[in-house]
Image (cartoon, rainbow, N blue to C red):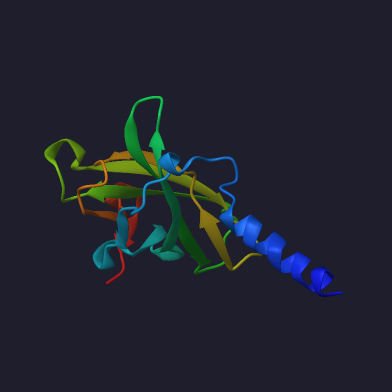
Length: 164
């Protein structure tokens, strides 16, 4: 009888100890810290004089690993966004751009890269959450503690402006 009660606990412990087929060398102990720049957290898209969408960076999903093929540590980051419809419109495709930037660390890892996203928002939806495709970035090998940043680009030519 006691063995029947212990079996689920033993299975749980064994499952937690399992590495799911990955070696510990595949994972980096500390992933880079991802920060959302306050001044680039939200934008408004306009059509004519009317505000139609508000787009906000809400977070991110990510992981770090060692890429054996190229012998480099890498971060995989998928930013998350909240898109709010501000006025009734038939527009269903929401196009916007965002950036990921490393501003600290060794020189060869510094830089800002722009990515483009397209979310589908049905006409009768007022709000959706959208996760962008994963972006893979080479990162310094474990010994550097540096920050990465995510933010939205406001493109005036596309009638976008930042929310303050």
